[in-house]
Length: 602
Image 1 (tube, rainbow, N blue to C red):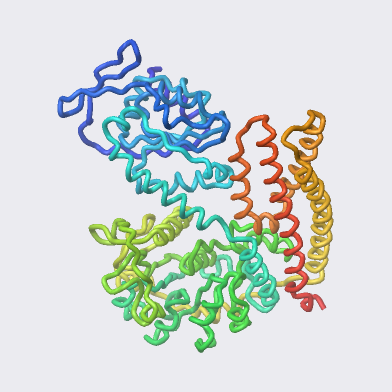
Image 2: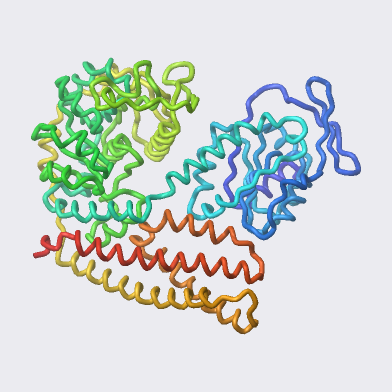
């Protein structure tokens, strides 16, 4: 086994995901000359100019040995330099080793020994800046999120001396991604509880509407058109009209009114947002046909669900803990869940997958700025246009060349691509404009309609024949009451423990006997019990996850020393945690008592 193969084996045995881009064919940008006795590597560029790579560390950018940090380390040309820096970091820090020039990784695999990094937690990255979305998804997971408060950047000797320009785009992407993640860290406790209020108010309608589990595969092999409000839709209205009665037309709430005005009656209208503005914009003064069904998240404004009463599809939201909790209380199964992503169009696609539609044809899904605006004409955005941000983000277009987009559209695009990748259904992008969406086949809408809209399909009739939800409300009420009793008991215990912590905080002295310190420390260790309890309660964790993540970052920002100062800071964080936990439990109890449809069990 040669060194290259040995290194590949060492790297693969770590069990950690790396993010390696395919090598772009072309001329190797440098030749390796050799390494001197001091470990200095000598290279010669294609311009015949030599350059060196020294294993010399940058003393000004060293990690903090007392903090768990996320260290973005640029350059893999010298593993000795990486090992030196890693030896000065906290043992639980994570090194994200980014190599803008993948030939340096190829060189390292052939000439370095990766066993040198066996005691280092690291991820290898050679993806271009525009291809880092999967890396960010990994780094921003709940297991690693606490590290985002403690980020540092380090540049190896090559990027310090010769090529700082290559790291600029990476730094911008990383900074923007972190800011965006903080913005979307999860709803505040208050916002999450507003969602719980709507969920509890809307579940009473489930017994009067189609059983979502019975909808699974109900439209097998029927083409479905997911119609969004992108500017490219304007030119395709007439072709969409030809699909009526021969496929499922699923419209986002933004475009439903325009479709009706153009003689197109969608079979379904989708809505996901909980804000009153959705009710005011798209439902309050709008009359919809009596054969139109609503597909809605339970979190939406209850007036919208009530408006459709016996014509609502009310799925549980996949991957959201609040709905795991709710489905268990309602006695539902995994077939009651749907993927909803982050938009109405994602929900529409999730519904199409759920009912077994094929192919799924995307229409008006531009995800980019059009020549005349962000949305099709005749929508609310014509009167209240979205201000075009100066983000200067470009992405590959539906046709040749790049198109201007935004961070939120890039996120929507990534969600679509992830959804499509997990399903084997044929996905056709018939938008004919905007951004290219991977995992789809591009086809003009008129061609798609002629090819797939062959057989008649009465969607309303099929929906009317789907059995209704069968929910045992007496059992649900019993489970809810048991839950309230359990968390009330937890609240009492947390309150008592909180009193102990606050007392220690009041009497704290800068100098205390070892016995006193040990007593405080032993009491503080009991906080772990309540912290771990949060993760065993789906509803509690759902409502606390955003603020909890920020709080855990505060905790991990405390240096790992034996000083009284750090112990006091730890105590403050524990007090904040217990206050948050006690208040959240109290609020959850009030929300359930005031909004659960107790009358449904009567």
